[in-house]
Length: 259
Image (cartoon, rainbow, N blue to C red; front, side):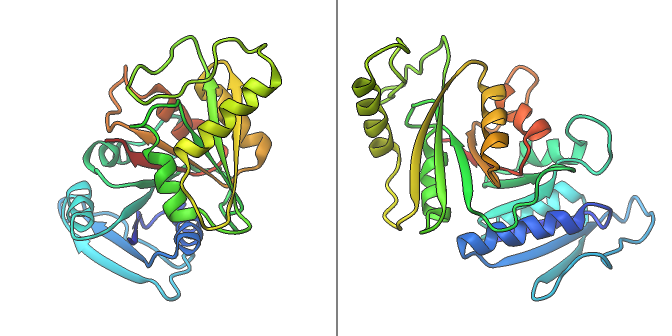
């Protein structure tokens, strides 16, 4: 597993690379960077003067940006990191949207203004309780579970329950006896977490709009990373939680493709 960082040569690269370095270091992955120049769209030469490239290989290539990154990712890269946008305009940038639609590997997405990862101490993994979505938890355990680090398994109770076989949604009645909730939380943790590396795991249950609840929890916990599974489509009527996180999460978002 390795992490490939797509640099734009513009403002924001320093923060993106710093976050990518922190995530790769926490996971024990090698890190390399790439900058793609488009010969059909000449412009100002890229500047990497403010970027700390110490110990990192910088690959410079030419071609269509998205196609080149997809090509490099297909050559054995485990994950790709990129910025959500390069301008202060609201919403996701066109390049980010194109990469989200083209890549089928885990992606670290960093938006301007997000809290830096720094030392990864706490991450939040939203889980609806279905096996296919729990791939995010499996990946988080494999990559980031370690002694001294906490993984918060966040389940947001809504009016919809997953129907996939093997799912474990929270009990419908939020006023059930405490021991019943404790039993459900214990089973939830055991079913979706298999880490044996000594990291702390905690199940957190909230009620309400999933995107708002996740963002609020990430903010209140001062989490450095949110790890979420998704099904690969950013069409307007799809992935509303993922889109909200990419636009408003207080910290970087790590996307894991669901099966």
